[in-house]
Figure 1 (cartoon, rainbow, N blue to C red):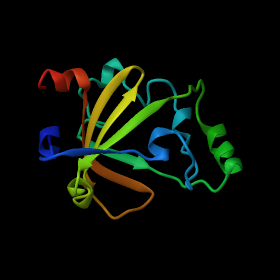
Figure 2 (cartoon, rainbow, N blue to C red):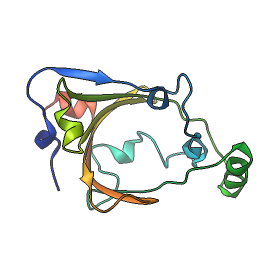
Figure 3 (cartoon, rainbow, N blue to C red):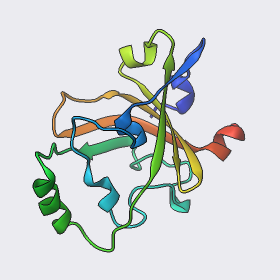
Length: 148
């Protein structure tokens, strides 16, 4: 597993923010129903402090591109209840010359539930598709500040 420190970039850092990342503005991609996950499934909770997405340090995502609101409604009807709205602010970091993106690495700072989470993601482990996997390390901001 890679540690977050291996993802540090030297030189100046720029913040990259998109409408999809911030939840503001419009995007040509339909919204993901992640806000419909049961409480505690996607967010900074005490049990996730310093943890990666999976015990093995690999994030696994299943992504569906939904054609329209009706298709989204059908998917949401299958999800468990209760559901809650999840609001996040995502800030993506990279060097001025885009070295992280060129290496297919992601460094993200996320604000959620009044907590900040720093996430470093490695390059995809397989060809692109509906199921993706990549190495990931996450730390709450207070752990980063403490040098952990």
